[in-house]
Image 1: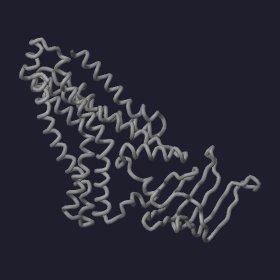
Image 2: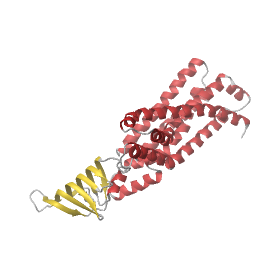
Image 3: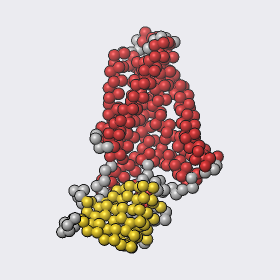
Length: 359
């Protein structure tokens, strides 16, 4: 590595470290004040609060890492330009692209670190943080992700609507189980006030069974029952796992859930979009660098301040575009891979065009 490369990387890493530290404080304070009412209501211990905040910090910090990267680059290059060092480098015969290269490679390294951690251990840490919040602070079961109004896909094209679920006790209340054929046409429905899981089977109580029957006038056969055993392969824990937040799932878990939903004939757009976003968003660290370079090297204090603001606006438009495309992908209006990578493509092309004009 040449001396100039080491100098430029060092000039970037110093403000980058400060930006990361500032975001650590901001994220921690934001999450603390957001949950402070819960901490007080459940008399959370100081140790549990600290564990909750620290274990969840890396996941959220990874999301805002590109913002820290952009701010650090704007500051470091702005200082180099203000002191005339970039002009001196060019005067020494070093082309502009060669000066940008070590910074972009640093951004690429950050992208790969963010990519690897986002697919592996960061979701696990976030899950541990949520577990502390639910189990140690709120005194709830770790599997009680959503006890009220749970909707989940089941095997053999079944759809479950559960008014209340207690996974530990193997109990469901106000449960409706719809089954469909291969063409998604309704076949039958079991509805019951209570369903309990006993010896590997579900017992429905105080319910109604409805089935499609073309021979009848209304085309529906209906029977009431007090108690009935219903052969459903899902266990209580399966419904809790179905409701696990995608933020808590590693890359392999997202792939596994998508495959499971595919086998059941249920939509899995959200899982696919989330997985592709885990692959795409880390490269925002490089894109924001490409966006920031032309603005950081503008001369004049007023121009630097103005262009600093422009760069930040463009960066936040990037994240706004990510949210819009993500929503379209989850609704099935756009292929998941396209929804995840579209913002990278659009803003990456804009950044390359802007940088090309500047140099």
